[in-house]
Amino acid sequence: MHLRHRHSWNLSPSQAIAHQKEMSAEVVSDRPIDLGRVRLVAGVDVSVKNGHSQAAVVVVTYPDFQPVETVLATMQTPFPYIPGLLSFREGPVLEKAFEKLLNEPDVFLFDGMGIAHPRRIGIASHMGLWLDRPTIGCGKTLLCGRYEALAEEKGASAPLVDKGEPIGVALRTRTAKNPMFISPGHLADISSAAALVLQCSPKYRLPEPIRLAHNAAGNFAP
DNA sequence: GCGACAG
DNA sequence: ATCTTGTCGC
Picture 1 (cartoon, chains in turn brown, orange, purple):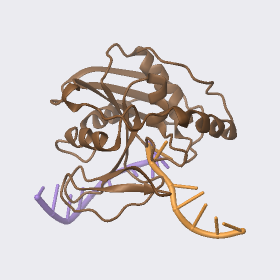
Picture 2 (cartoon, rainbow, N blue to C red; picture 1 turned 180 degrees about the vertical axis):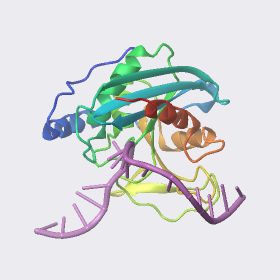
Picture 3 (cartoon, helix red, strand yellow; picture 1 turned 90 degrees about the horizontal axis):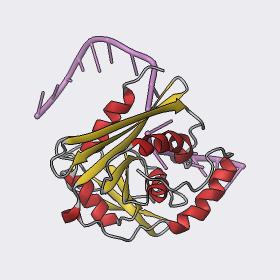
């Protein structure tokens, strides 16, 4: 896939934050995804071992999740894990993987946040700007914001709010399991993002495309 | 100043 | 994220 390079990855934490503040103004998080037109969904994940990172992007058909393409990329892990700056750790190796991608997925699902981020630009939003395609953040734990208790049944959800702003939803993708935290990355809105993720979770808590990417990324020996 | 903190 | 075996439960 063609990518739009926005900045160098070789940055200090304070420079990274400055770029986030500029880029967050470009993120589009109020545009519904038309689920009826979705044909290909990509799951994105990164695994880290002994100072090396491997990215996996798995493209599957929607709504039946048949694998269409898998790409991998590896490199030395370039940046430490700092809450709020995850994209500067995983972005470089993801860029390598995206460059190999032949298909053009209708939407990308990321392991991490979209706008549910202190500066409203988590990894799904950030990479969405580079991809210029719809992206959704799917976090397993919370980075910021609050939510009220939600029902135990699959499909139940509660608004995720930070500083008075709706930034996503806590979504139960599996009955009696901890909710996932879903937020628009770029070119998506909260409700359609949640609806798509629910449709992408037929059996497990993790959405199927992300599960497949997680398995593919974790299989390497640096 | 104190607490919180995606992967 | 990763380090790690068995074990409780549908």
